[in-house]
Length: 107
Length: 121
Image 1 (cartoon, rainbow over the protein chains, first blue to last red):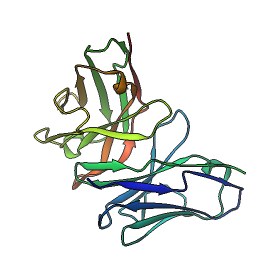
Image 2 (cartoon, helix red, strand yellow):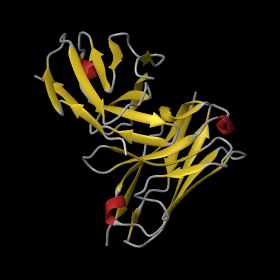
Image 3 (cartoon, one colour):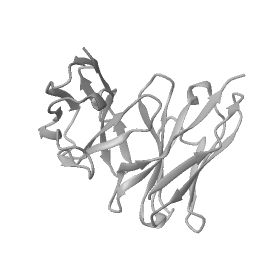
Image 4 (cartoon, chains in turn brown, yellow):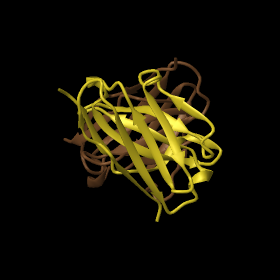
C-alpha cells in the first residue's frame, strides 16, 4: 500500500508569511496528487490537482510542485482566510489515500 | 450551481444498519464518479467507497468491505451508502464527493456538507 506522510503536522505562521507544506509518498505516484483545505466544521475544498494545477477559483497565492515522491504546497503571502488544515491526497482512480494533515494556525 | 446534500446520519447501536443518501444537483450525475469520504471526530479524512458514473463499477476501503454498499440512481440524481454491521469506529461525519473529471474518479471538486453517523450503545 502507498503511504502518504505530511510535514509539519502543525505550523504557526503570520499573515504575509510564505508557507510550505510537504507531502511524501512511499513510492512513485507520478502526479496523481491533490491538495485540499479544510476549515473546522466545513467540508474540504480542492486547491490543487495533478500535483500542480490550480483549481478554478482558487487564489493564485496557492501553488503546488513535485520532485519525485515529494510534493509541496506553497502559500505565498498567507492571508487570514488561509488558517486551516491542509491535506494531500493520492488518487489513482479508486485507489485513494489522504495524508494526515497539516494544521496552519496563527503565530 | 453544483450541489450535494447528504442526509440519513443518525445515532445507531453497534451491529445496526443505516442508509445515507446524497442528493445531487447542478450537473449530469451519470457523467461523474462519486465517492463517500468520512472523518472521525478530531481525525483526518478517510476515503470509504466510490462508484463510477454508470454505477457499474464500485470500490471500497478495506475497513468497510463486506459491510457497506454504495449505489446510485441517476434517474433520481441520488447517491447512497448502505451501512451494516456498524462499529464504534465507523463513527464519523460522512461526506459525499463528486469526481472532478469524468476521466479521473479520485479527485473531488465538489463536496456535500456532511452527515454525522454515531455508533454507540
